[in-house]
Amino acid sequence: MIWILGLVAARPNWLIMVPFGILLVAIALAPLIAQHHWERHYHKLCIALASIVCLYYLFVVKQPARVVHAGIDYVTFIVVVGSFFVVAGGIHLRVKSPSGAMRNTLFLFVGALLGNLIGTIGASMLLIRPWIAMNRGRLAPMHIAFFVFLVSNIGGALLPVGPPLFLGFLKGVPFGWTLQYCWRQWIITVAIVLAVFFVLDLINLRARKRAIRESEITQWRCDGAQNFLFLFALLAALIAVRAGWREPLMILIALGSYFATPQRIREADNFSFAPLKEVGWLFLGIFGTMIPVLEYMEQSADKLGLTSERAFFWATGLLSALLDNAPTYLAFFAAALGLHHFEINDPLQVADFISKNGSELTALSLGAAFFGALTYIGNAPNLLVKTIAEHAHVPTPSFIGYIWKFALPTLIPVFVLVSILFFPGSASVAPGQH
Image (cartoon, rainbow, N blue to C red):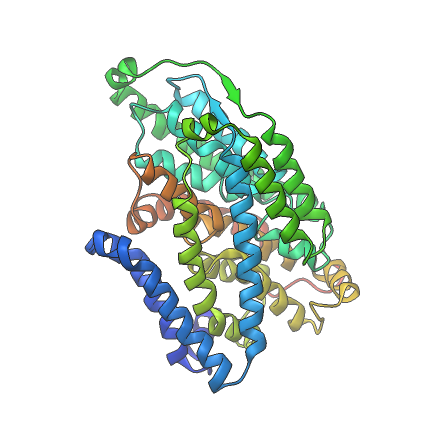
């Protein structure tokens, strides 16, 4: 692709991008090579690499604003993730088990819908433990992978109630815009991924019948239902409260939920702050080290060959899989606006851009939301789901195994089909068309 050649011809200081590459390689390989040492020292590596980049921007190139901006984004990110994590951890769903392939498929579909109502973070934290429980006795790495695909990523592509689309909403994209223009791509993608899961789960079911018969049989039950009110309060704060006030309010809501929930419910959920702690350290490193990567994206959009909707879809998508998809979405949104001489911080210009070049926004929105499922670091809930599954001692795909065994063979063919059906590979549409 032309945009890949543009990356090769980039002009920023490549050395300062090395810490980001080191961190990605460490996240992917260190748990496989030296798991014990990684678990003890990963936070030190994250701090060291992020510090190198931040100190470079503070004292060498003297651009403190970029460090401040990254810090604010990280704080917002961890407050949103942490708040939903705490509140969802106070709801204990006992689902009917053992579960068959059809019930599992329906569960994932409901989870995908719920990702639009309470965000993919809230839906993931609410449903991952019941998902593990209802498949106890036959849980395979495939179950964790498809949960991440549908509940943590693809499902939440219709409403901007969480990252990455929430950032577009803050910049002036109407709340219902993605629902209006992305529903067809969403339905096709969700339907195909669910169909693949159903076939694989049916095979798994037939191979593990003895284990299922011996597993505990439970019925539907919900403890801590009052926390659904706290979840919707978080959602309201996320949507309606301005930055600066939003984060303290979400912290207060999470604290209210935590102290109002009986300890026995969190114990039934095996609730622990360990998964949140791990995600917090890893994304501290990611947000700190990706500053120069995002700077390049902002300054060199015209060199990336982003001349078609298909190019925006794949470029945003593949970078979202390597970076967190929230800042990647924002970077490509800014790039798209810049290509048409619009300013991302001017709501009137954003509205003008959407009315004239909305198809490009559709492509980059779906690229970010869909491709976030391609790796564990592509979207905020992915690592949380992984760490919760690992703490529950269930089979969980490794970083490389998740990509190689599940994400690439399942998702890439679907994304190719979506790009062929909906996004022309020729030059972008003329202004006014959509």
